[in-house]
Image (tube, rainbow, N blue to C red):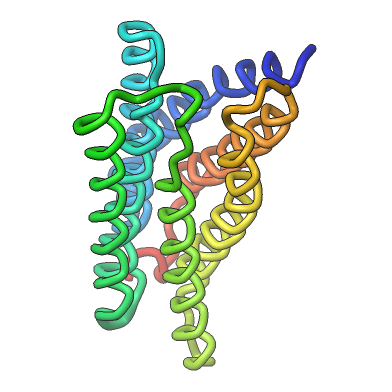
Length: 221
């Protein structure tokens, strides 16, 4: 199989993984803690985004805009998650940075799809890199906040934060070269895309697994 075929096959697995996680969440919904319900909401958002991506790709021949919609949705959700749930108090600098990130992604959408007719060879978005970078900063800030409080008991939150930190950090490593190679004729770019999709499946699988676990007192806090 070619790298492109592998990446497409893995991409087809993501809605299946998301569906399993959502079904598990629905079955255990009454037992889920507040954080787990937010994770379930995240899975639902990603599921809708995935379906919308397939529809737009089928309807218009490409789904480039979905990378921006995905990044915008993901960043908006993560800002809410960290500012409202994960952090002990609001981190104003990170909130401002997050809002600026949302503004940047929105501006990139406008520049690419509203004011200019997109040309495939010129498609080189940085929305996902901006999205990843801001979430990494929030995850690092959360770690610093928790490490400064050595009596921290919310290990469920800490593990979730570590999962986000690892995913978005490694994902950025894949996306940076992909952005520069997206218009290249070589199939090398699909190795990076395959890495991205593989990470996505691992993240969704981990979040789906959390739907199967009865929350501890820490998760209920």
